[in-house]
Length: 398
Image (cartoon, rainbow, N blue to C red; front, side, top):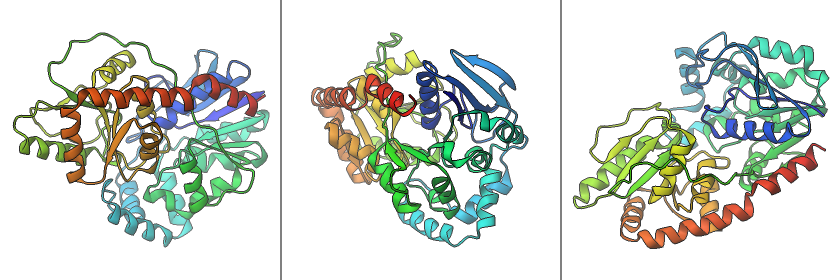
């Protein structure tokens, strides 16, 4: 088969769950099919700055075509975002409920303006799809949120569209305009049952169109041996972003440390920084690290802390489980809580009081916490093994 994959950002160093999923799918399918990835020259979704070379390159057996972004995200889009979605404070769900209600009342043209200006605006990518899209047996669009999907689908026959929405329960997902993407695709692939149910509730999914394919999480290596840290630590790994609930975690952890002067527990953060990190003696930002370094930190951590309210799968949680590291997740995220319930591999919290209890428990019971992590490892081996996922993709793309 001749397959095309459309994704806003792509590459080994690009951080993002949907982008990681797209690259994994590309490499698996390239073993049996001809795969071309259509993406942009930007690696940062906040600015869409062109920091990668345009043109053709190879990623193993995958052909990658990069197209320039002609406009960065700016104040105009920020104003649209505030108008349509409200002041998005990740952990404050009453605020989000009001934002959802506002989103439903906005004109369709304004919603499309929001999508267009959110970026990436890559007209040459859309022109390439219009000219060459019909040459492909299937065109796979990754994530519902961006114009590469929303406007890219206009240039492909719906009978050949496969859609991987990576849908989150977030205010922007409630914009009715995005329902167009769910109606255009002939097949829609979801990471979890929770994501499928959310799509059915928000936009409807026609019978026979939606499929829960899951994910294949490769078992990590041992990681690069690092300096043994004398104090126990929680690890946050991912985009350091308000949308990921990080500011609330930082605030609440600092408060808890102030109330527990004898605690040795620290909070380490790795990933791309998009929000301020306060100066605190027990909060340490290590920047962006290599995959081996991340694995080593995951294996040393007392627990992975995942405060995000918006996830369709939670790849870093599966990585932590592979390392036999338990998780502490935000309890308003149905996907992450279900992983912890099904595996008995982690705890969850909904407010500061519950977080404080969980932090104290992890510090006081490291052996029991490790038992949770071992149960998480068995869960991810059973439910998200790479071999089973490869077989599912082979059946979908014979």
